[in-house]
Image 1 (cartoon, rainbow, N blue to C red):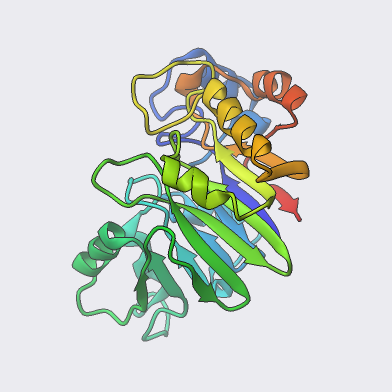
Image 2: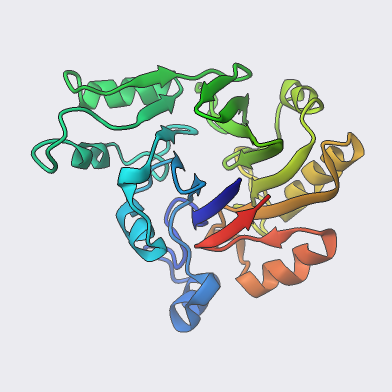
Length: 268
C-alpha cells in the first residue's frame, strides 16, 4: 500500500493566498518543498481522500488520472477539503458518463452538502460515522473522531490493506479519550498527522502545533500504537505556524518524524 500526499498546506496554502509573513515570502522566493497546496492524498493512486479546490492541478503535477478513482473519502466539511462544485466534471455534459464512476464516503454534514448541491444526480454516497468500519474493495476503512468542528463528526481515517495499517489524521486537534482508547487496537505502520500551527500556540483547539504533535506521538508510542518501525509524516502546514520546511526538518527529524511535502510518496 502506498499513499501520495497531493497537498500538505492548510486552508489558504503556502505561500498564503494573501500572506505577507516570513514563511509565505520564503516560499515565493525559494519554491520547492516550501510551496504547499491544500491538503489531500490518494492511496494506491485510486482511493482519493478529500477534494480541495486545486485538485486538478495536484493530479496534473503528479501525472494521475481521476478516471482511476474507485472511491472518494471525505474527512470533514471545511472548504479546503471539499470543493463540492468539482464533482460535476465527471459527468455529462463534461464527459459522456451518466453516473459518477466512484463511490463517495462522507459524514452526515458533507453528505447533505453534496445532496443539496446535486439533488437529482446519480451519485452513490455512503454516510460514514466515527468508529464504524466499512469495506471498499480490498481496503477496510475505519473513521475515528477528531477534535475539530464542535457540531460535526469530523473524521481521521484508519485504512487497512495487505496486512498494513495507515492512519491519515488531518485536522485532528488533541483527540478525545474515546479516540485514544479506540486506537490501542490498531498498531500503525504509518501515521500521517497534521502540524498546522508549527511553532505557534493557538487558542483554537482544532489543530496541532509541534508541541501538540510530539505530545500525541509520545502517547501513541507509550501505548504501542506506534512502534520502532512505524513511520510518522506530517501534513496540513499553515504559513501562520512560522515554520519553513527546513525548520520542520530540524525540529521534527530528531523525534523520528518526517515533514511531508506536496507530491511525497510513502510506501508501507
